[in-house]
Length: 137
Image 1: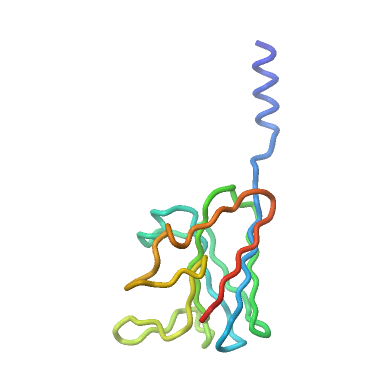
Image 2: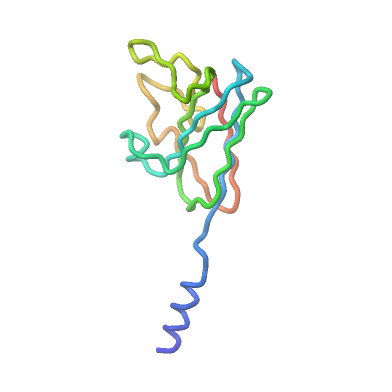
């Protein structure tokens, strides 16, 4: 019984594995403004409009922007982002709902009649630090 108690105590004292993710953006059109992004950790949330695991707004400087997420559980993640050129915190759209500000997805996945699915956008975050690059067009 003492061995079981010792193992349980060691497991409780061991911190859960965590990873960090750096998402770097290359902005090709307007070298200013901010990138608004949502980070998803499940296919259901990503594909069905669920709540993102994390969100961020990062300034664009000289055509680049970088978002940092620490303390992530290892697993698969996906990013949806847009370039908030006018700085209002919302994606500008036409009266028909078509985006008028540049946008992008992880893996630089391209929309096909709507946002690309989790299968096209998800990527692994494992180990201590992962960097993922996205081009906003």
